[in-house]
Amino acid sequence: MWAMDYDEWALELTTRWMARDLECLSRVSSTSQRLRQRLQTENVPLGAAVIADEQTAGRGRLGRGWQSPAKMGLYTSFLLYPGDRLSGLLSLVAAVALSQAIEAETGLAPKLKWPNDVLLGGKKCTGILVESSSNWAIIGIGVNVGESLPPALTNATTLSRQLGAPVHRPRLWAQLAGFLEQWYERWLTDGSRPVLQAWRERSATIGHSVEILHPDGRPLLTGRAVDVGDDGALLVECNNGTVRRVLAGEVSLRFEGRGYAPPSGDASS
Ligand code: BTN
Image (cartoon, rainbow, N blue to C red; front, side, top):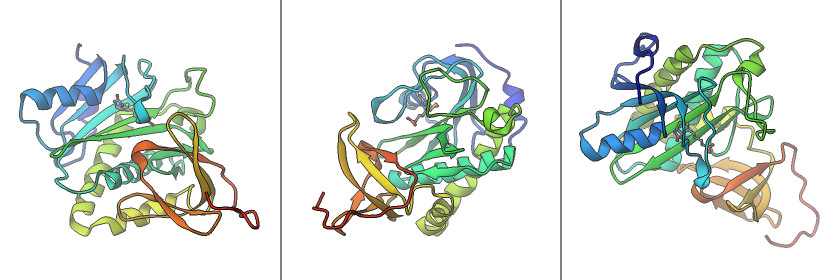
């Protein structure tokens, strides 16, 4: 590991405590893994952050990877100590903060797909991975920033593609740190209601047909997404009218992006 230009990133920060302990790396296996390593050997302050130009073993949700080519994306992680608060909601806190950062830096209007994907033009442009133990949580965030994308990612897009102009990664990152600090504090002081409201206002999921899938792609249930619960669970109204709570940890969601019309006489899922 070797250093990237620390000042280029740190000088953009306007936060009080978020990312004030900052490590900038040119290459690392995973920014979240790096924070975990630090936790094993030292007391790491609240808000400690890692940014890397490139990740060689970026991690995604559900045990997947996250391709992280050099300087094409924002790859960053932040350390929080949310106590016994629910980590399901933390991932919505991060999604709201990230969508506001993108909006502030680019003027684009992102939408949120449950649990925490940010969409532009209906395509995914970010990933959020929350890892937690009993006394810490690491929020790992990846954003597709540059023009190019690995060819396999056909259902994804990038900020520069959507904007039609380059996006400044350090400024985007500093906006993210700022909104994350604000929303995290708001959540601790005011509870879940404001963050849930902000999430709903940006939701591309609520009111639409959804299919909940096991990580291996097997369908688990289908229905209409009707709301999110206080713990960040998605509430899905099934075809027989029952409402099921779906927790983010073990499933993915196929978003059909259209209104929902239950088939008449449909059996229970
Ligand atoms: C997803 O699967 O949608 C979540 C992807 C999260 C990727 C980010 S990149 C920075 C941080 N470090 C990692 O290894 N993963 C997260």
